[in-house]
Image 1 (cartoon, one colour):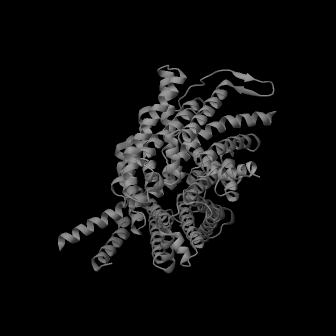
Image 2 (tube, helix red, strand yellow):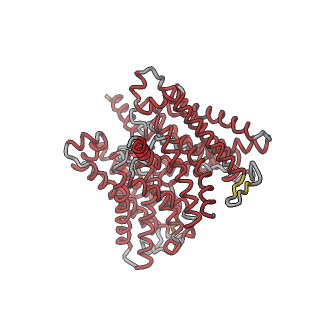
Image 3 (cartoon, rainbow over the protein chains, first blue to last red):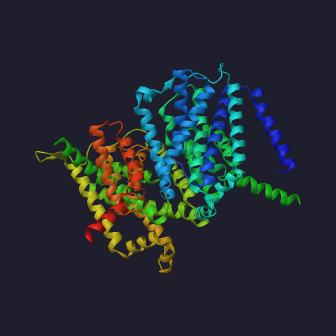
Length: 311
Length: 297
């Protein structure tokens, strides 16, 4: 990171911190909170897909598990909410690891379909288990994370979560474990012969990634205060995946950029009304066909071109 | 008697699942890609059948042939225009192709939503009346579905096992480099088999239209079944997909009859995961092994 990059980063951070104090628009803040949550999810989905090469199509299910666990614990046992969030995340992580165990014996693609099937089972389960989850009616009356329903607190809360998540991801990837993850993606056989237990790496990374999904889901539950089984639907997984792809998979900043870009672009497209989703679909196709490396790749290319010009 | 009736119902629906699964697994076996727009091909065929049958008043056999041809064209065009550029660009095209087909799914769903509206449309049945065997009752419509799908499965089997094109497809799915060395035009096989896959799903699209109705997101139903059948039978295993379709159809019908209709899909998927824990490669290879043991004890 050069000095100029660092200045840019600090400037950007200051801007982000000041925005809500200047723009007193509740709806804008809400969008920002959503984008920050999705950025976290896309980042950890990218840890699985982009860095480890393991596709998880049931990702939304872990978000749902975290949300429901945390909400139910807070409602029935009135435990402190941060503790509930951590327990929700842990449960999601454990389920994530358990699901990957049978997948270890299959070819890569089966993992995609097994996790997709699991996502559907979880959604159906959440709908059918009305005694616990109230089914399609949804859970309501979840205790909020912060005593006052001030969006500003949630704004800084989710920003903190995003920064924490991104830092943890950075540390993880720059450690020995990160190298092991990358070598597992590049060549599993070679990694195994170099003494890396790739199966253990897959389980560990799945656990971490699903834990993050659970925590973000729990944050969502204590922010929105009502949750329905719709939270488990594959539509969310696809959205998370699109953000990670659109931003640039296998990069740290890509998924974050992608999440913010797509959330705000999606809102910007509102003037197109019925054509909005159509344009969204074309956008996905266009990105894959024209910018295979996503936004992060495009920015890197522009940066390079500028650098060459300056010299 | 109720149990037998359920088994027969399961067989009928399983036959359709087999066709859906074969089309999906075929593409996976040959090209190593998952086609997320597969359900949308079904949806297009369903809408086409609805328009051709109820608005234009064409006979069912003509509708079937028209839809098979149309979907073959759409499938081949999709491969040429969307999959080919992505495939040619990078070595690891599995995930980019998933993204492109996902984009296509969203585009097709919303295009149809704009053109036809989001309401459920459909006809009550192609054939009215039912066959009463005393111990079992089966409607002519379901008999027709069973007949058409069995015929289609037989035709597909013939195409793959007995024709030069089918053998070329098998060769590509077994060893890509070897197939190229034997003078097989890889691109041509890819395009044709993508078209074939879309043409296969056109038949369930037409036949199941009275049962499932048509609406822009109807494709979610068949694609979920396609995933389940593919996984059950082993990825890319056509025989496995045929058996897997029947297993899924029967287990689903039994689950909705004896457990809960709400849990129907859940039970099918749970069953699938259980099978995978014990036979991770799917039931297809296992059955082949079993058959070899029976033939050569």
